[in-house]
Image (cartoon, rainbow, N blue to C red; front, side, top):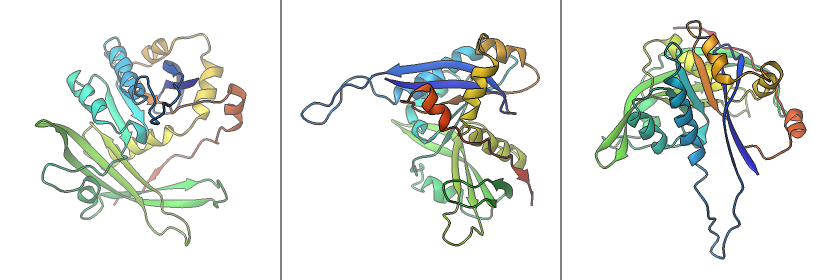
Length: 259
């Protein structure tokens, strides 16, 4: 069995609870190596659809669906547009998409001077020493081709590490969102939300702090004081105790050094 949970947290990374769970079992491949059943990518669009339904009952709370590279799907963006984007979306870009004028998304976004930079402390992990990471930021509003004369308006954000230590791969994040960005601080806010996606400790804290309360109620109590950030979780196919052993330590927050 595979489980794909969607859980809600505040911008301060306070977990509110699980709001949706997509569970399935993979069918065996046939002689041609094909697997039957629905496409597993549907879990991302369904996750967004459930959050869009919640938005109608939370008029004073902004919801943002945050997901990793697997959610860089045009069907998800088209669904949000068709529904009137009741909840914003923010995904890690997996594709260097072609723009209507023939340019490539990533090259177009990172052309020219950066709009600012950030610095944050990265803890030691996987044999890599702790260090201060400095990234330069590029932001561009783009039109993504969606086929049959359709297009999606989106903002692309690239955060690229500079002056990385020798023999260390520079850290680069590429984000896509429907949200418009008007300042460096707003760009950093998007990066903060995307960083929270990898903090699986939030799931454990959610289980400990809100075991008997619905996530929707938790968001409603926060209405007017914060933005509810909804994250699409990744697949899990291990036991609960095994998952606990793999929980990383929470990361530190960004510190702005604006130009």
